[in-house]
Amino acid sequence: MLSAAKELNYLKSGPASDLKKNRTKTIALLLSDLSGPFYSELIRGVQEIVLENGYDLIAVSSYADESSTAARFLREARTDGVILLAHNINTDFVLNSAREGFPIIALDREVIGNPNIISISVNNSRGAYEATEHLINSGCRSVAHISGPANSKDSQERLAGYKQALADFNTPSLYKWILNGKFTQEGGYEATKMLIHQGDLPEGIFYGNDEMAIGGLNALKEYEIRVPEDISIIGFDDIQLAPYLRPPLTTMRQPKYEIGKLASHVLFQLLAGESVSSHYTFDAELISRESVRLF
Image (cartoon, rainbow, N blue to C red):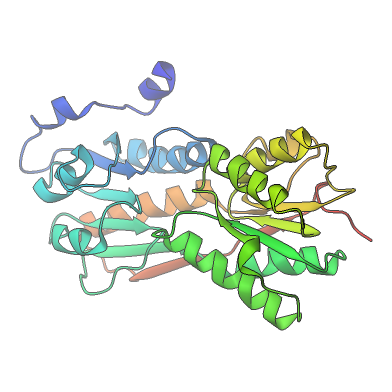
């Protein structure tokens, strides 16, 4: 962890308070969590452009209230700009924080009403639709969904895409088959156990991210439910561990590295006074592996 922090030019929040009011030559990356496999490629993409421009990167973990270190970086403009991926920081607070000379690149949300905020997102609803469609086309007559936090735009859109696919393919949509796994491995494990305890397992499960799918795999193995022979599963993200699971995980790939690079590139365009689009969108790509049974 320490070596990774050094590679990212990571600074704790204390030294950040000493940064000068004018150009600080630093960019802040505010994340819900500094740990977890999803963030590593995103951070690498951000870091590459930031360092190319001779800036330092400050990575800060956010918390739910507006007194947190991450919120203070927004409120007090401690850096030259911010890349934000933290659903627990209120959108109104973000709107009120961006100003001329202090741009914010918002990931995982679309923020309208401030020209100094640029949104970058993945077409989550389409990706979720394709994930659910893949399970149905593989022969699954019933599909459950393990979702992420209710206040996450990613989670909301993936749930919507899942429901739309069920409707389009006349596949039953049952409340008992939609559970919240909080985008964590432990949450996916617990949600899958709840599915199992209900005693009426679906033929497929769409997990809103790969971390929850890993937890789900562990729960299914505990109960000797075979993947994909007894149940098919698909994730979202394509984290580095996905192809090395047993079985290798079918998933929807997010271009995390590319998103990080674009976020930094757009941020520096804004700092240079250039015009940019207000919103950029990436597509997710189906990566077919062995966790989905093809009939």
